[in-house]
Amino acid sequence: MLVRLFWFWPFFILLFASSVGFAQSIGNWQAYKDQPGGGYGRAVFENDFFLGSDRYYTQGLDLEMVTPLFNRLITNKLLYNPRFSFTRYGIGIQHNAFTPGSVSDPTLLVGDRPYAGVLTIRNFAIAIDTLRRQRFYTSVAAGVIGKAAIAGDIQGFVHKVLGNYMPNGWLHQIRNDIMLNYDAAYEKELLRYRHFFLLSAAANVNVGTLLTGAGVSTTVMLGHFHSPFADERASRRHLHFYVYDQPSAYLPGYNATLQGGVFNRASPYVIRETDISRPVLRNRLGFVAAWQNVCVEYFMTTLTREFATGDSHSYGGLQLSIGY
Image (cartoon, rainbow, N blue to C red):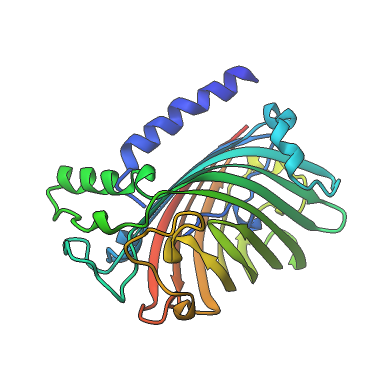
């Protein structure tokens, strides 16, 4: 088991080194992202470049691992375990960067999205009830927002290497602050036809200094796939391919990437609470192919404006996971 665990870290480092230019909050609890088996390593990259833009949510990277070695972590005591059929524990590291519509302009762009970088590490649990076809997710995350997240440095380095225009407005970014968040989600299978069609509904809630709010969603999966609400470890020997669509609505209470940190109120520019859009509607469309231990995904996400003077926004992403 230790050999398998350490095998994943060079894989993660390689992915990070080759993808820092890629790139809101990346979630791993949804049923359509299920990876069967005892454990897995996963990398997710999100970037609006996939859909031909460079603004708002400009890039995101998430690296996570699930392994039985994490079953005894002391921080697991902070996570709710509903005692379902089985529970997987994992650790994830996430980096996100947000910018206004023009990153080459060095002036403070009032009315546009603030610059913000976020770096967090989280401990999470995914519990699956194979009898009642339901899933429950909890996570606790800690990290930083601001210059300490080095989002501006990363974007500047990548633009320089690519010979692109330099991002000159990061001096106006949201100031350093501590991020602490507790998140929970519940998803229930509503309708399924063999391994070809599945309809589910979900609700999630976020409480903390990074993001506070609640949302609901439905997901349709169509193709050939293992059930994410069952324990089908043997099914991964077959080729799986499917398309999914997930419309959702989210009611934000507080968003530090727009409104600044809770403890440090010295940011040069933030979006006022009265200008936060509520609710935010989102749709994610994805294509997934899986063979044995390997799963790849390409997805596209569109969301309505998040603040009064903003616009709707779209971005794409890639996911690669390897299970064991």
